[in-house]
Image (tube, rainbow, N blue to C red; front, side, top):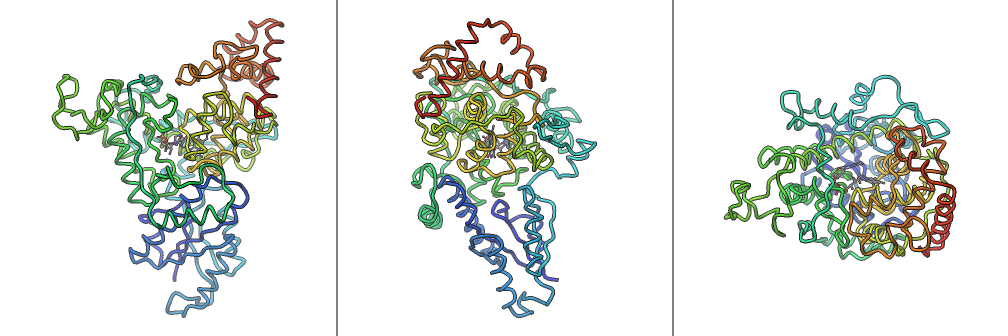
Length: 562
Ligand code: FAD
C-alpha cells in the first residue's frame, strides 16, 4: 500500500526514519495563520524559506514531493486529494480507498487530532507516529513521572510540580550523555554556579556565523513583506539564520569550535550591543527540525572528550578576540604561545554540561510539561494578572536600558538570549502585572524560534508564574539582578540603587509591590521565605512610597513614557 509522509514546517529533516518508510512526501505551506498576528518578518522568511529549500533538497535526493501553497491545511489537503485523484493508479493515484498519510505527531497541542479529522473528512486516513525530532518520548516521560498526568485547576495551581533537575539527571542516565560508569562525568550533575560571570570589557565574543541569503530566501522574503503585515526589522540585512540542514550543521560546527569554550561562564551575562555573546543560536534550526536535538548534544559531548578541561579551568577572557580559535590544546596551561592558530580552545566541563542541560534537560522537559498541562496551561493565570503589555514591548521606546536593549534585539533579529527573555522581558512583564497570555502571544510572533509548544511553558509557566507546574517560585527580581549580570545599569538614566521617588529603577518598586500584592499566593511557596522576611522588615511609610512609585511606573509604562 502506498503511504505518503506528510511533514510539517517544523519537521524539516531529510534523514528521518519516517521518510524512509514512505513512498512519497507531502508538504503544505499554509499561510493563513500568519494573517492573524504581525509576525516578525525574519520568522516568516525563515520558516517558508526553510520549507522551500527542504522541498528542493528532497527532490534532489530523488523523492517524489508534492508541495502545496494554500491558505489553510484544509485547502492544501483539497489540492493534494485532487492531485491524487487525477493520477493514474500506477502512478501513486487513488486506488479507491483514498490516500494514506503518515505524520509525526505535531508538537502543537491538539494538532494531530485536528489534522486527522481534516484528512478523514476528505476520505483519506492519517496515521500519527512518534515525533522523532525529540529525544525522549511521551512513554519515557510517563515512566519517569509515574502516576497520573498533572492537571492545572481553574486557579492556575497544578496538582504536581515537576522538577527539571530530576528529569535532567534521569535523561543523562538513560542516554549516557556525559556519564562515567553510572556517575556524572566530573562527579557533579550541574556546574551552574560557575556559569554566572560577567565578561570583562576587553573580551569579545566570537563572530556570529552568518549565512548569506540565497535567491530563494530573497524571493521568499520579498513575498513575505508584500503578503503579510509584519513586525520588527523587515529588511533582509542582518538575516543570518541557517535555512538548510547543511547550513544548520555548519552553524553547529562553528558553535562547538568557537562559542562553546565560553558558553558556560558567560551564559547568564547581558552586555550592551552584544545580542549573541557565546550562545549557540541553534534554537531556530533545532525547532525547525534542521538539526536533530541529539546532534548538538553529541557534538558537544564529543568536543568535551577531545578538548575537555576541568570545570572553570579555561578562562576565555585571558585569550584575545581569536581566543576561541587561537589556543592550542597542547599549549594550554603552560602559558606558551600557540603555534597552531586553527586549534580550537579547550572546553571546560561547566560549558559542556551547561549546554547539554539546556537541550536534554530544559528543552525536552518543556515539551512534556506542555503536552501534559495543555490546554489549561495556555490560559493559566494564578496571579490574575490582567494588564496590557506596555507599548515599549512593541516599539522598544523606553529609557530603561535593559528593556530597550532586549526589545531592540527582538525587533532587529527576532532573537534575544535566555537571560534577556527570562530576567528582563518576562520579569518586567511579571512584576508589572501583564497578562501571561498576551505576553505569550508577543513572544510567539516576535521570535524566530517560537512555536506554541515551546513559548507556552516558558512564558506562561516559567516567566509569568501563571501556574506552578514547573517551579514553586516566580522568576521575579528587582533591578539588582540586572545590575549584577549586565553592564546596562551604569548607562541607564534610572538609578538601580534607589527604589522610590522619580528616577528610581522601575524594576525595584514594581518588584516589592508585586510581592506585596501577591502575598497570599506567594508567601507560603517554596524558597520565598527570605524575600518575605524583607517584605516584613519594611514599615508603613516605606510601603506607601513603594506603592506611589509602582503606580507611577505603571502609569508611565502604559503611556509609553517610561
Ligand atoms: P543557547 O543558550 O545556546 O541554549 C542551547 C539550546 O538549549 C537552545 O538552542 C534550545 O534548543 C535549548 N533550550 C535552552 N533553554 C530552553 C528552554 N527553556 N526551553 C526550550 N529549549 C531550551 N526557546 C525556544 O526554542 N523558543 C522559544 O520561543 C522560547 N521562548 C522563551 C521564552 C521565555 C520567556 C524564556 C524564559 C525562554 C524561552 N526559550 C525559548 C528558551 C531559551 O531562552 C531559548 O531556547 C534560547 O535562548 C535560544 O537561544 P540559543 O539557541 O542561542 O540558546
